[in-house]
Length: 287
Image 1 (cartoon, one colour):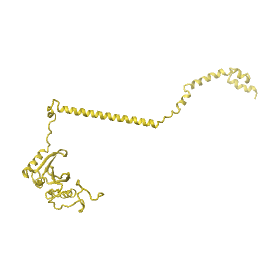
Image 2 (cartoon, helix red, strand yellow; image 1 turned 180 degrees about the vertical axis):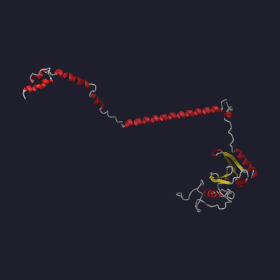
Image 3 (cartoon, helix red, strand yellow; image 1 turned 45 degrees about the vertical axis):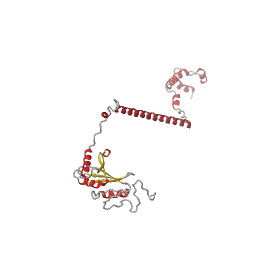
């Protein structure tokens, strides 16, 4: 191909500028530099808003965390413990001050105007139990129909649903049981439960006769000597007493004269002693 054919494309691409000079002279004159400078400036302007170092800084790893020494851990735990103890002490002191203030306030309320003034008005007497009339009536019946000294003690057991409670002398118990069963005002045809108690100074048998029609229940206690405990059997009056009296005899050693078949019911017949007595010592400690 001739030199004229080679120059035709160059002339077509740049008709306004002659390119007749030899290629060796291009470095010295550099005719294409003014045209290339405007093209480089937009490229620089387009990359300016996103500088390259920013992503490198964000991706940099965090500084390593400093590890606590054993001494520092111990000091931190000690400080935390001391803070908790101080808080507990402050709370206890505040509670003690509040309690003292309450006691002083109650003392002042009891005697606001001096000695013997205002105390009874501030605290009126407690109203009697709703079962107190029923208890009084039973006591009156026993003293009238059994004996004047038949009742040793009578009170209302408020924690146990205001249960009327009587302590009957041992020698009057059998007639008292018959009265509870047959008297028209009492009519306790059912004996709900019997229990035995060892008080170390004496023994006691506790009965709970119940009226099945109006559901009035009573608690009757009979005390007996601890060395030779004996309480008259009420099995002939209430058949439900049969096995309960046998159990009390078996475990506490209380005799029930008049019982039709008083023998052990839980322990073997040849067992020595009564396991629920406070002074019971087993023959074989491993049993």
